[in-house]
Amino acid sequence: MRQKKQVRSSASRLVQRPRGTLSPITWPNGRPSEIIDDVIAGRRDLADQTGSIRSACSFAIYLAAKKIMAKETRNDRLDALNELPKLVRPYVKREVEKLWVGKKSLKY
Image (cartoon, rainbow, N blue to C red; front, side, top):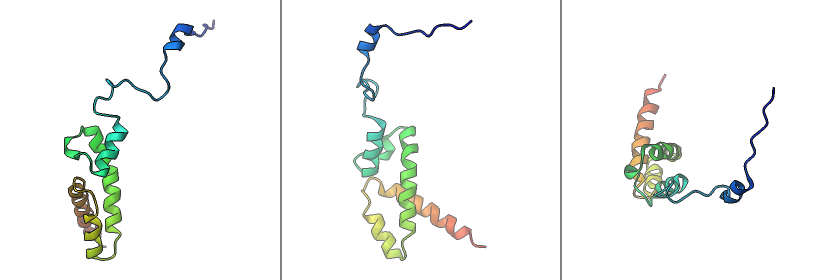
């Protein structure tokens, strides 16, 4: 036999918050997407963030390193690296070095 769906009372519908809003207690340091944007823009240091934020930022760092690796000359790559925000630059530089070593080891 089928059971009826439980329906919320009208009082609980009135208390609902608009979609996408969270309590300030839920995100004491700001929303994760804002923190990720701040790290990538160089307004926050990556080393001070939680593991999940560092993990989310690692893809953006990888993409920045790939763009730098696509440059033709060494001076172009250095200029592109120096244009990055000061707090993000060491992480992108480390990723470029990893990609460079991997690129050299792929010779057939």
